[in-house]
Image 1 (cartoon, rainbow, N blue to C red):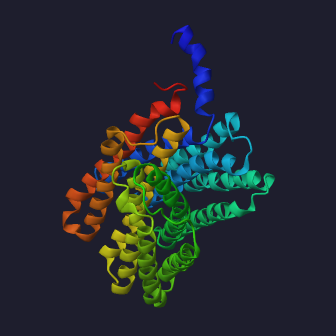
Image 2 (image 1 turned 120 degrees about the horizontal axis):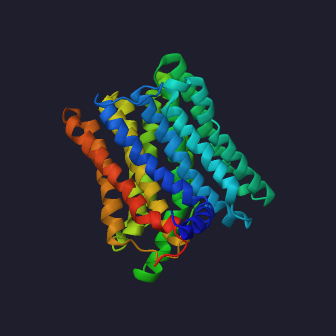
Image 3 (image 1 turned 180 degrees about the vertical axis):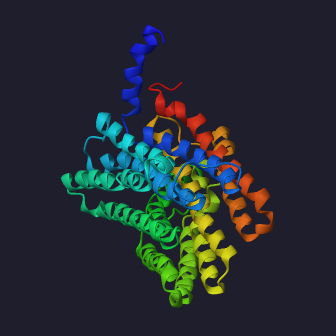
Length: 400
């Protein structure tokens, strides 16, 4: 390493830890790609990962309690200073928080060696620490209206504890993963219901004049209450099967209501700008997941059940995280709020196709050996696309 490069390194590191979205968005994307790159061949029997978890349990844990918390951390640590007017969480405290998240990933991956309980203790520390930091900032600014975000993180942590308990006792996960998915989907529906009509309205005013999407109104509140009840009933129905029909009807009702809610945001008028369109594409998987999961409970159909889960995970979670990460990174790096071709075809198209193919693999299991690897490859390409095209915006101080 040259003397000049050595002198520049501390500046690059300081810049990298100057905002929560920088380390956590890049790490989340790398983890998402690596997770699927390992899991698909492992699930198909070609390799082995030295973890004490089963292939399916490892896949569930690292998606729900590894990848998603990193995205949540990157988003909240960047958004909370705007909500509170306080200084952004940065520097060595941010580096320590990021190190705690990374330690959890390494602990789970090597739990076959270090022991399951040690690994779960390390991996379980991140969410409560993150919740505590966010709560401290909100309390200092007396911003009580956003305490619900901390509550959601708390519920996600409770789901992680339930995950550990279920695996330790039964060797498989059933209720905990539903609890975690339900929590994340509720968060997407809540926050997405605020930012999507807002971003859409801003773009329409400048580029496609006409009716503007409404803000969060009583209708949205009613839809969220119905969705919250349905999402709460969904994991409970796995433990109390007699509630399955009622939960299924609630999920179907919530799916229809969320779809009507999205139509009010004028998605059809955003097709000229993929940076806005992808938000609507990602959100579409929310009502789709409700409908598929509701039908699965009513018909007791395993294929529909898996399809519903992956509409929410591969679709809503995967696509929405990339939609938010690309937009936030462009905005905070001084880039135009538009999607270049590299973003559209290198990130958005692959993630949408990956979700569609993963749902297709669940509905047509006879084609799993074709559709599952292809869906996995497209998922990997989408998240590596974020690393390649947005990594320089995250790492470099000056962008040409």
